[in-house]
Structure formats: C-alpha cells, structure tokens
Image 1 (tube, rainbow, N blue to C red):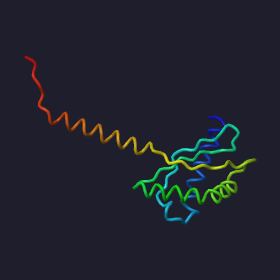
Image 2 (image 1 turned 90 degrees about the vertical axis):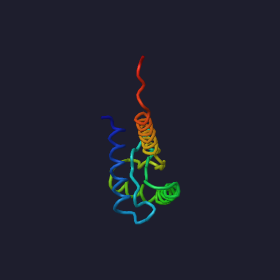
Image 3 (image 1 turned 135 degrees about the horizontal axis):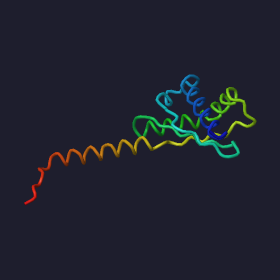
Image 4 (image 1 turned 180 degrees about the horizontal axis):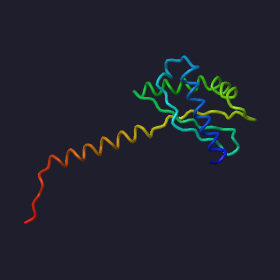
Amino acid sequence: MSRIERVSQQLKREISLIIQRELTDPRLEFVTITQVEVSRDLRQAKVFFSILGTALKRENAQEGLDGARGLIRKLVGQQIVMRHVPELTFIYDRSLEWSASIEETLREIKDAQQNYPETKEV
C-alpha cells in the first residue's frame, strides 16, 4: 500500500469520526464518508460523502460540510501528524444512487420475465 493510499485511508477514518463525534450540525447527522482521494503532493483531498434522503438533505449536508471545512481540517491536523494538512473539498458520491437504480432496473426486468409466458418451439 502506497503512502498516498495510507494517508487517504487515515483521512477517511478521521473525518468520519470527526463528523460523528465532534460536529453537532443536524444536517450532518446521516453523512457517510465513502472515499478520500489525496493528490500526489498531499496538499489537496477530495472527500466523497453520501447521505440517505432527498435532494434537499443532500444539499443541506453539502452546505454543512462546506461550512465546517475549516474546523474539520483543524481537527484532522490535531489527530494526524503531517507537514501539511490537505485542503478538503467535499463531493457528493452518487455511486449509491446509481447502484440502487441498477438494482431496481434488474428487479423490473426479472418481474417482467416472470409475467411473460414461456414460448414453445414448434
């Protein structure tokens, strides 16, 4: 495992704990950090998150994370010893939505196949 991967994993773990334990913003209640991508120079980090619920909940969570960005970065710097704590950019992770959509489509196909009578070859 490379240094960048280790830093990404550690950032994911620490940011998740900070959101869970340190922040009291109700908009962040059901936020899950799904992935962190760190740049090669370790100065930038894309933090991907997901949240169950409506588009409004997602927008509120984005606003809450963007508003808490400085505090989260400060708390990360207190937990992880690094020369430079990366600048954090929070990005909504749509992969859970996509997988749910694919599952629903597959379920519809399966149901449609069960409703059609089998054709017999003559």
